[in-house]
Image (cartoon, rainbow, N blue to C red; front, top):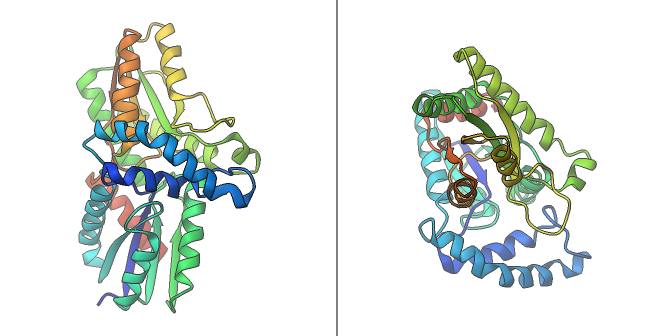
Length: 319
């Protein structure tokens, strides 16, 4: 029995090729991400879009091992976090996903059945957006009402946490040590967001820029010289205006300027999944090669010790 439970909250991903279509249906059914006509048409249209997109998405997942590694990695993060929290008392650390198993409701049910008197929901999206953390918190709040938990905390943004910034800095420096900075450009890449969200006051873009500025400040303190840098936004989907420039547009722009090497730094993802393993490592790398450039990627945070200590610090601060 553990009185305190931490639930690591993330997007989730299809663990097999068979799971791709139902995962896409769950994703496109969420009106917090994209509104498909009037509310009563959301689910029928989500079903249609999932059926249309499934074959192409299955091909992408087949190139990265036949499924998403996000659950495995998040469980590894949970295991590591539980270990570093041990000196601070008894904690259970569970995983709850928004769009695939184990769902948020599954993790909350398990925590309640284990007798948790404090539950801490920790969003693994460092930068807040209504489409990600906001939608996740909505599910979390709805489900936790089913249980009488005396103390509930929800951590929804930690984009400038010093240890999180330190972890990315360490990974960037590791990459630069192996490549050098001559003819190199740092391209920070984050998941894009519909412009309409920003117009309604979503803080996501501001927090992404805050993360990048903090990383650059930390890098300047650690290095005498840094390569030029810029920000791109990836993973657009649907016929709406998206936050830009897109990462592929930025790669083309850099090629036109004669840049020879691009190092992509993922800043809105804390683990490897389709956006890093397929979109960056396969699609963007192939695009760069066709344009006469070399594209490399900084390692994802995954279970990097400094990152795990960042999560520990965030949890302890919350309680």
